[in-house]
Amino acid sequence: MSITYFLNAMPGAVAQGLIWGIAAIGIYITYRILDFADLTVDGSMCTGGAVCIVMMLTGHNVFISILAATLAGMLTGLVTGLFHTFMGIPPILSGILTQLALYSVNLKIMGKANQAINVDKYHLLVSLRYIKGVPFYRNTIFVVALSIILLVLILYWFFGTELGCGLRATGCNDHMSRAQGIDTNLSKVLGLMLSNGLVALSGALLIQYQGFADINMGRGAIVIGLAAVIIGEAVFGHVFHNFGFKLIGVALGSILYYLVLQVVMGLGVGPDWLKLFSAVVVAIFLAIPYWRAKYFKKSSLKKGAPNA
Image 1 (cartoon, helix red, strand yellow):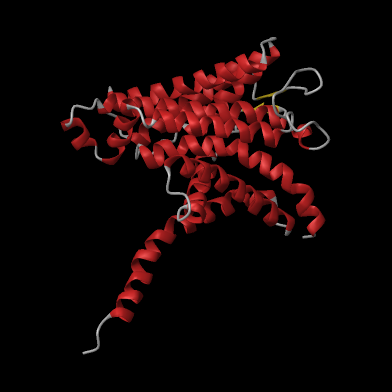
Image 2 (cartoon, one colour):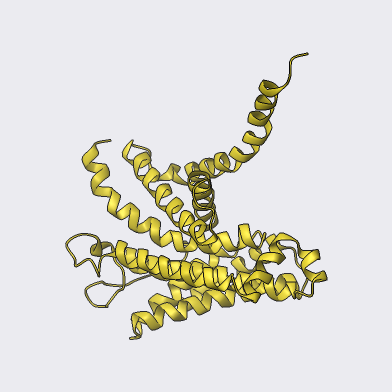
């Protein structure tokens, strides 16, 4: 792999990593804060993209289309939340059921398996073409980075409110939160809606960036999102202790993930192996805390033990 190849590919990897970073923040809310294994995201990302592209193709403004996509994603989270809280279905099965249903819903929204949108005919907020040779305020990296900062500020404020603190408490200890008078069912539903809304927002930006929506575009989103969360925590966890900075660390983890992918592809690894590579990366980073606790602490205890 040449340095020239990496430098040319880096802006695109950063832009794509930032877009997926929004989805990773949404996954962080369910995975870390709510302690809810939600697989809805594999379907809600496509829902956001499908709604956004159809809205734009029918003449709606890009911002209205993105808003509609985000609301559609929140609706998918509401369905998963009701499956779990109202019908008593376990978290993983709730997400799988919603994800399964969304395949048909997304096909119905788009009318076919894939739908394209032309950057020359429609005003897009972000695009692959808006990486080089455009004013900084139209540059995809700048636009998405600014969006993430605004989202982090809003989330930081929200999770400091009584409702947000109740959501965090629900994820820490469901039974204790209920004993303290917190409506844990409402917190779970709200957290799922917030998470899938962010994932759908990421999908709405992704279809603009790549120029098309596909029925399979969200497949594996949970793995990519978890990779970003785990990498962000492993690399920046010792530096970022504030909640807001942790969310930024997740977005940075997504960028690192896509930069590593570019390096791997530059070394000649075919795209057919990328899903396997993603699974291996997530597995290794998930195992690091366990290995650290099991092996490194034992070795440090042995070194610090007094001589007999």
